Length: 137
Image (tube, rainbow, N blue to C red; front, top):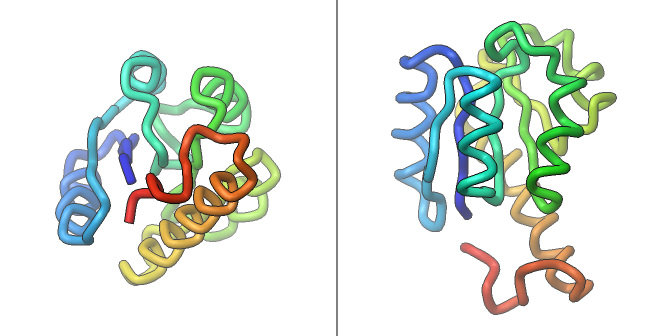
């Protein structure tokens, strides 16, 4: 599973990268610190999954989600925030999952597992870019 990280804090991106790259089948392919950087890099890489800070660079994420999906229609999005009370706002904006930054790492890995399941379901329907034999493990 090819993952892009979007967070304005270097320490957060570093910690996420270290956690994810220790997991079989997960690869961080790109990082962004700002909305503009995210949009630019997304067009070039079109990852399977985006982990995005809900408060990225002061961007209004609920306006950003449609732009992301336009650029990469199969993109799965997990919103991250230190404020768990924005969970319902994130789901209302159309993210696939939400993880609080204060949750243990297992919560993030579970959310990624849920997204992997969505990829598998899409592939099983046959209308997406992956065949069942190509689903990243």
